[in-house]
Amino acid sequence: MNLGEAPVLAHSLSSADQALVDGVLAGQRRALAKSITLIESTRPDHQQRAQQVLNTLLPHTGKAIRIGISGVPGAGKSTFIEALGVWLIEQGKKLAVLAVDPSSSVSGGSILGDKTRMELLSQREEAFIRPSPSAGSLGGVAEKSREAMLLCEAAGYDVIIIETVGVGQSETTVAGMVDMFCLLQLPNAGDDLQAIKKGIVEIADMVIINKADIDRQATAVVRAQWRNALHMLRPASPNWAPPVITLSALHKEGIADFWEQVEKYQSALKPTGEFDAKRQHQALSWMWQLIDSGLRQYFRHHPRVQDNLPALTRSVENGHTTPAAAAYALLDYLKH
Ligand code: GDP
Image (cartoon, rainbow, N blue to C red; front, side, top):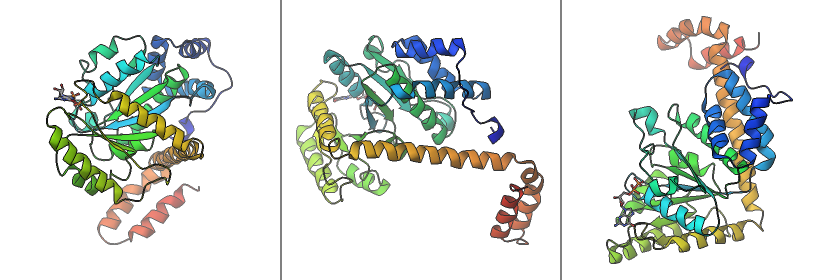
């Protein structure tokens, strides 16, 4: 895409797209799935239509609680999300589960894309489960998931779960698009140190230690370690100390405790304005990420940059031009 092809917001929707919008607003899963497919398409005409559909639906978004759940493969994410989902449906809620899995573009196979996951939940009318977009960089995958999240909100889902694996930057990326980011951990001593090293303790709003049924004593020790680790950090908000809870997703124990924390989190941060401020900050930083990547693409596709880039690249490699001089010369081509 270059800037000339960037989505331009037209005033009216085609009748087919209006039908899509109406279907999403009526909570029709087929219309929702079709709109997500539209936003995942890389065709410029699809992109343009997708942005129009999204903009039309924007006033109907924002009402759900957005929860991120991260954990290594085998931590029990799908078991937990399924148990939570069934429990939430019993409470009269509708939930959507989306995945951000950049590993699919690296390995060619998706960790979170397996269709057999969450079989029970996927049969429920009140649940909508969508695997990760299968192509693209982490930024690209995350952008599609953010937009899919908005579509799910417009379709009336009360709870949006964004699931991710602890691969590279995916945890930070998901933390940047949800209200509450939760780490799902195994009762392994020392995992807190790994998380500290990776810098993800700082972004956790809650730590969940799963598989407590396997060894209750070890679970209690690991819980204490996590509490200490979190205690050493300055919390992101003076009004929220990230809790450490234990559960057994397999035996459906601790699900209500988890939800109680989600509700406490909202009642702590909504009255102070922090909840909305976080969303505003996330929306602006998303805008800037898109500007940055759009500018980069525009730069790379600019004819004069393309003409001069090979020679200047060689010149920097050979030490004949400084990186700064080459960069400024190339940027200068954008002005003409
Ligand atoms: P994911 O890769 O993070 O989605 O993990 P899964 O949900 O697929 O779980 C991996 C394995 O751990 C499965 O065999 C589950 O049955 C098992 N498992 C998940 N939660 C629990 C739990 O609370 N207790 C026990 N004992 N096993 C669990």
